[in-house]
Image (cartoon, rainbow, N blue to C red; front, side, top):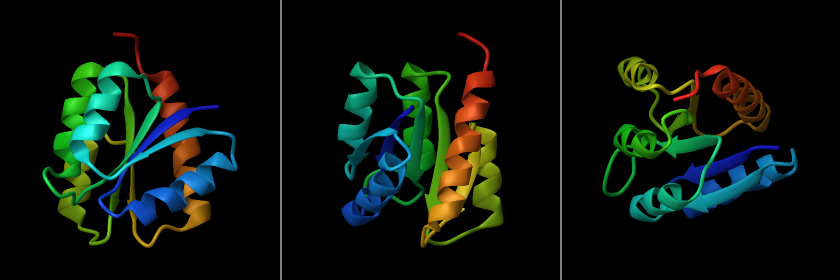
Length: 126
């Protein structure tokens, strides 16, 4: 299955996502620090990033931009506890393929992950 990176400033949220996605057979790496997640992507390939919009040092879109410098074909799902239409537009313009509101609904998460992985397969080689 897929290699997925989860970055959320609330560790429990990341652990919950990991549990849900591991049951689907994915390998999930959870981080709650932006710098650690960025260092991980410099040395490891991932198929999908699930990023919280509101982090401690950076926002999720900035993290996505940095990750895409190393992994240009990286697909991303953005998470937020405060849904906002303008923020969603920014996320899609930045290359996110899905946007999820918290609290996380298990079925919606699984559906969006499956779709995001399909989109990632369709991206051209760089």
